[in-house]
Image 1 (tube, rainbow, N blue to C red):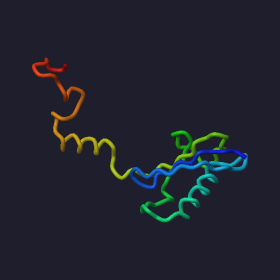
Image 2 (image 1 turned 90 degrees about the vertical axis):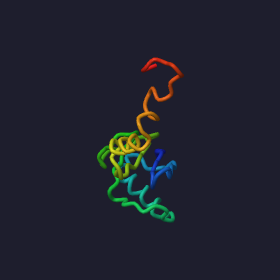
Image 3 (image 1 turned 120 degrees about the horizontal axis):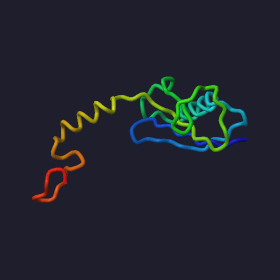
Length: 114
């Protein structure tokens, strides 16, 4: 038996993680199916489309045929609701140039950029 950590994020700030014991030679696809079965047993708190998720190990999206090893961290990746670049631009436009950036907090009478 091998032990892998499974991390699934069902919604913003709602990460579920557990250790799952699987047989030696288990693939990522089989581990994903087992994880989805566990998630679907719990009460639905967040509306999300489970089949559209991508699965990976230690931050890398891998094919379902990838054979897991003891100690791997299996992660589910949801599709993004908003492009991070667009979200950053909107936040910057909302708070303005003075409140953002590296030099937003300057001392009185300081030179520009310090």
